[in-house]
Image (cartoon, rainbow, N blue to C red; front, side, top):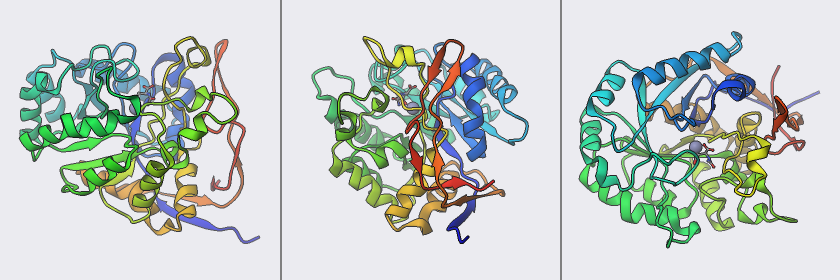
Length: 347
Ligand code: NCD
Ligand code: ZN
């Protein structure tokens, strides 16, 4: 039977939360199956702030991965008010850290030790600009008076633009963008210095989905799903093949007991289906010709790393997303659990 197929260079995922311990062991294979490399976020319960921690975390990741996959974890340094230039220099020159991550304090999961104001780390940013080390940003303001739906747009105005003016050659990735303002802002700048990642869930869904037939805690993530007009802006821009934008799934597993709680955690675990979601959206947008640049080329170009040699083939064949993963007595529920997508990985 004729099946629609697409073969692309094996993608990289430029924004992944792998967690640690038992969770890491159970979920890592989903990223290894689809992606050659991944940028590993440092926001563990015990955050990765030093080179020594990154080296041992990287080893734990590699030990947890099935040897069938030649997977390369790329480590990041969590910036805190006490991060030293020495650590940054050592980490970047010895290729322990590919980038450093900026979380404003209390902006998201495990961000208590984040930065209060970007001005507190000016000396670090100046140094990163000098050595060409990328800065990865969770771009949301933290002022409690700012409406949660405006925090990303306000971040650009209040924090990102002044920072960019000060450090025009600092390489910045605005992570998991969700708004039309972000799309427009990123597009205006040189992609060598400013690029952005986009998640599958922000491409597929908008905030209506989070409240469809009741509150859907498994669609709660940060930044929040936005209005449809923002979702459309994201979909439209990737369908033009614009080089500023690349794949970063923000797969972020949490135990069920932490998702369904008085204070539910933010994060969507999409690793089992992220690539299949992206291909679905590119097909819907009639833009499959740009799937490869988004998934496998624009990211490496920004990070100055080689493009992968392996390829991966996706076929238009129904794929049912697993319902849950058992973790001891608890479970992790993936994005689109139990739903069927039209694309699968060729076996
Ligand atoms: C992420 C997590 O759980 O670590 N959560 C999320 O909703 N995206 C953190 C983050 O990337 O903001
Ligand atoms: Zn994230």
